[in-house]
Amino acid sequence: MGNLFLASPRVVPRNCGALFGSAEAASSAWFGHRAALLAADTSPGRRLAGFWLFERGMEPPRVGDQESVLRQLGELSPDEESTLAVWAPWPRGAADIALDTNRHPYQ
Image (cartoon, rainbow, N blue to C red; front, side, top):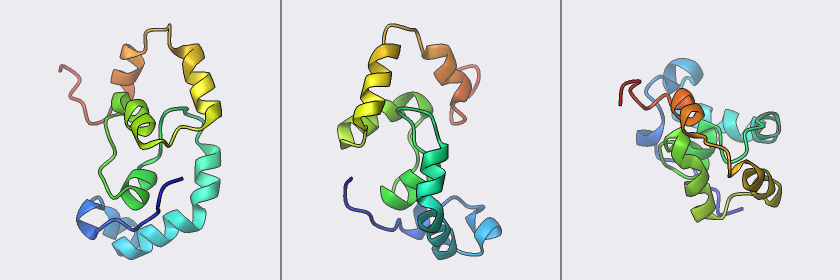
């Protein structure tokens, strides 16, 4: 995995303070529970927001873009690559649109 670093507070969502009290507390919660959170997430080619915010220091990409961004960053595991290769022939546009909370439903 690449170098881990804390994201600057400007990248942390606005409601972070309401949920955790501060960006530092949110970061601490992410890293304190990271292994369990990632183990519970079974979406190949996707990462939870904490990964993007606290490990990559960036806003999470759109759901439909995460796989390609993770591939460019070298963050896809061999198991993910295998699963995604099996899924490749299937159209995924509708599912990606449905899961993409950053996309307006009529775009």
